Length: 182
Length: 146
Image (cartoon, rainbow over all chains, first blue to last red; front, side, top):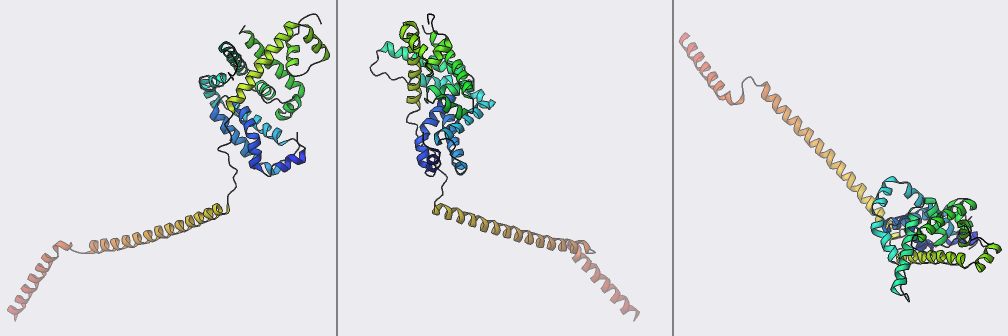
């Protein structure tokens, strides 16, 4: 993790910041919203907010953590928007959920193993769908973004214990879903 | 640890909190090890799927809002042009209003003139005829008297 001073200095070249952090923010948004267009809009919003607020960035956290904080807040706002929630319920399974479940590397796998892998990925997706917004966020930050508990706590503003509790719940849901594949 | 791991202990293992007791149990219990491995594999596949899915969607649309000098000049010129057009339009509107007011005044004058006539314009020749006859009769009367 870069030091605070380095982080604040890094923001002077904002193009480079975007290039470096865009994939992570977009990936988190896509996994959270399961809607490609909404995720891209959210990533745009995230970087615009950061760009406008770059002068006030004090470097208490790394740029990456700061950007993920903004992204997590935007995902939360998005989830709270009932109108968008309606559309999400209506169309998410039809579009991106299916697309994402098909994206499993096939190299070196037999067709049976590939099918089994796709089923497991679909099961995890299905489990995350049933999680609360907080649980899903924490789960994605840990198991897609590989963040440790302290970093997740910094990004979400939750206590470490709360993060752990959300992760336990999420993992139980995933385990139950995977268990159904037996 | 003789019993199998609880759901919370498996979760602790998966999130990386691995106590020596957990490590020992995992090394001694093939069932728990297989369960944890199955979950780890599913989570790794999920991570890979999400990453592959979002890969390639790099920031194509985001551009910082830094305007070049040319853009600033163009913006200023456009603003100036807008002000000039606005002023001209206002001037023309006022001019049109003044012309309309003048035309109205002229019309009203004409109407007043028409209304103030004792006899409508089309009947004026008849009035002149009557006046002419009256004058002729008066002249004749005065001639007879003389």
